[in-house]
Length: 175
Ligand SMILES: [Zn+2]
Ligand SMILES: [Zn+2]
Image (cartoon, rainbow, N blue to C red; front, side, top):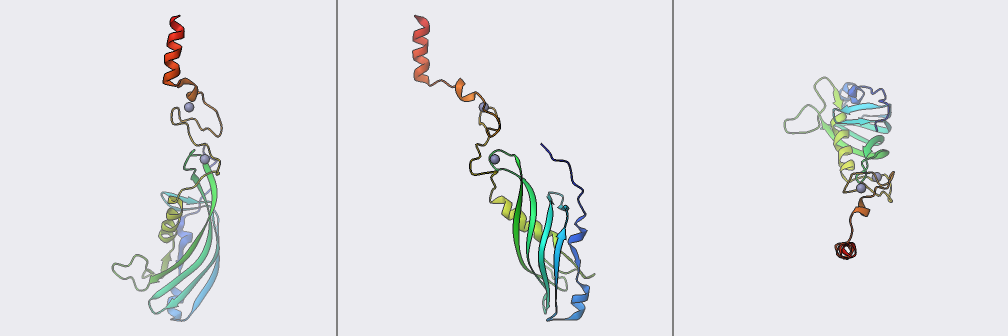
């Protein structure tokens, strides 16, 4: 069922060096365009690609990250478990505080590194948790034998004779 494993780049590509922007001071911003091939975001999440614009703006609290990223994900259909390739659009608007502040989830590290990985992972897992289907017409799996009813037709339902018919059958068999 698994497609050939593509070569994943390390999630280091999601660790942005924003040291220059920290030094520039408030009211400076930097626009860039993400175009990342297959990447391992975390142990439990790989993406086929990440594309889209991202803006980093320096303010008094740190760096505001805004972006609209299109990410390619391969996930399982909720009903039939077939792998589906899907594009999810992730809208990002998150403040990464600088310096690191206790109790704040997203911070720019002392070395000027802003790690987008955990934020992306959280956003994508939220999208995926809403459920995806390979299609509206997906027949799902047979509850009896587990066959994928989109691909095969099993005979489980034929084995279940209506109990009333079963009694009739018994009568007929006796005669
Ligand atoms: Zn399906
Ligand atoms: Zn079946």
